[in-house]
Each structure stands twice: as C-alpha cells, then as structure tokens.
Image (cartoon, rainbow, N blue to C red; front, side, top):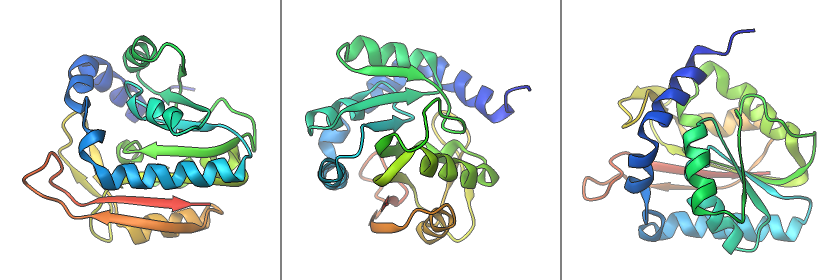
Amino acid sequence: MAESDFLSVTRVAYDTVAGQYAEFIDGMLAEQPLDRAMLAAFADLVRAADVGPVADLGCGPGHVTAHLHALGLTAFGVDLSPEMIALARQAHPGLRFETGSMTALDLADGTLGGVLARYSIIHLPPERVPEVFAECRRVLAPGGYLLLSFQAGGPVAEAFDHTVTLAYRWSPDRVAELLREAGLNEVARLVIAGSEDTRRGFPQAHILAR
C-alpha cells in the first residue's frame, strides 16, 4: 500500500529544513516556563504510575526527549524525518531515537507509561486525528498518560501557514472530545495566550489525558 501523501510531504519538508529547524528551536524550552511546568507534571504522574517508558512522538532533534530524561523518565523519541532522527542521535547519543509514524507505531499494545505528542498532531489531516488518538490509546498501559501540545483555534480545525509545512489549529474542547471517544480522559489542560512579542503568535494548548 502506498504511503499516505501527507506523510511523504511532511517527511520531505522536515528533512529539508532539519538543521535550520534545530537551530531555530534551540533553547526555546528554556524560555517557556509554563510548558516546562506541564512537562514536569506529566513526568511526575508517569513516574508515580510506574507502568512503562515514555515515547516522544514527533521528537524532532530530541531536545524534549532529553528534557524528559533529565526529569527522571525512561524516554525515547520517534520522528517521521530521518534527518531529524540523525540530529537527535548526534546531540543525545545516550538516548534512543527511531524513525516512525504516529499513525502506525511499531510498539506492542499496552507497553508505554506515557506518550508525548508535542506539536506533532498539527500536521495530521483532521480526519486522521481520531485514528492517531486510538493508536496512542493502544500503546499506553493502563494508568498511562498522554500529553498533547498544539496551536489552539476555533471549533473547526483550521489550516494555517506553518513555517515548515501545512498544519492545523484545533479547539481544545474538540481535541478533548476526540480523546474521550478514543478512551482517553482529560485530566488537565493549559491554554497560553498568543503574543506577537514571542515566537508564538497563536494561543498554545496543552492537554493531559489518561
């Protein structure tokens, strides 16, 4: 079966800009205390549940995977882009990184204590999001957690001009609804207002589910 067009387009786009993208986001997490707070809460809950490692889906150059490792988690990264994975392995040689798609994870059922999808669902066509949430539910162990981050928008998924390739903004309420339909219940959410004074013009949403 031929690979979905959107996967090919996304892979090529990120392969093409991998080095520039890694430079652009270098140090960005240090400027985001609220993001770090959500990651810290996620790490605390995953450690307490103690039911498996964490997969960072759409890990890019691996900086957040490394941050999770520093927070005491057994974390590994998965990304569609081989160039991103090469950069991640170079920057963090002690951690595990592999190419793969969040639409079909090469992981057994119920093996993960946590899944992080940080700004990776934004490149999914809206009709593919439910199957990805179901895939996250499949690989999570009972008691495991999912943390999503994405640009927030109105009630209908809205395409926007992302720096790298086509992306969509989502209503946090709609994302929470789709998570419930996949068997994942919202635990907490954080919505950060957008600002032209930062590198984030749109509001940013973070949803923690179990």
